[in-house]
Image (cartoon, rainbow, N blue to C red):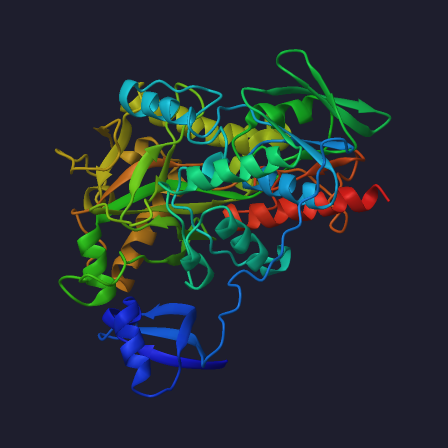
Length: 516
């Protein structure tokens, strides 16, 4: 096998036959495989960097290097996992590998039934508080862009997680692309396949099973109690609820199980025509048949009352849609998602402002839950000003800069609809000011970005958990309660599908290790 690095045009790099002929001009081989692929759009001429393995009369090795060996755990000791998002599902898979039976308790519905609840939000504007864009099988990530990029290389084995996803139905492209994603249309099937693996080897997954209490004896976690008054006990409890399980955060606080405030971010979601973003990023009128919908990443520092504050893009969704992500009626929360082909005519991104403990001082009576109270106050105000439905408050971008109510709004991907609102009335002053200055700076960095062809929709408030559940950095066990493993995004230790999945595996490994 010979490994080469080449630079090719998009029509060559993304077309197998064209790429074969291109390589054949310089090398002798009988077969090849693309190992890595990344787009370089820094110059006017777009290039694609490729790392390729060439084979000469050789059998191509197995693409997946990770050999997953699941054990039959039907009769094994059991551990409780609260939540069936990426952290919970990957914790379940890892426990099976290590010989422990996972019992996964999910408050929401299975991924197929969950679709009806999402339709109710979009069409009837009714939020099912247990099954929505945040709660249900697969967690918030199931109906998102399915981004698989993370900077959390130290948290676990990234390739192992990617290969596990491929083994459950994801495209092999996620193994080679620099910024891989799956797409919201394909994630549900992959999630369902992971569940079937867990069931096949003896694990259990229970839907519509909401945890309402913890069983703690002498500072040791014994199990949980669910809303049907059923008791579930195991050798340990992995808490993987996601960032919106506010009732669980409150329960921990009520039971005097240590939690603490964690910085987060809050802002809006902005939507441009995808063609405009392509024009800016690819330096051309049309991106053509081979280039994917372009994305962007922006960050700035803004001074407000002698305090420097970060404002940045978050969860940018090229060719995507804006969706209603509220978990209660009477609140507005928005998020973004993209199908695998990223073929919507819109590009959207969260643009959010860093929030620290000083910013929530007006909510200090809520203790460690001050960030939750702050989030909720903005979400409820957003709903009230937009008409007390799931219609979202919105404003054209330049109108927001000028503090002017938009006389009319643009076509938008957000299905429940929009209501023209001056967003300064929704957002805290420091957030609105920082966003305004940030947008002006972004317009300088991306010529054409600051335009009334774009509009901003409120509010993007669930960027990450506003609390952290403290745990030992080595064992992942709660600092106060033994046999209790706070895990993933809801506990404050992950930020997306990949880091949550890796943290789930890490907690599972530590649980088994502490069993001796």
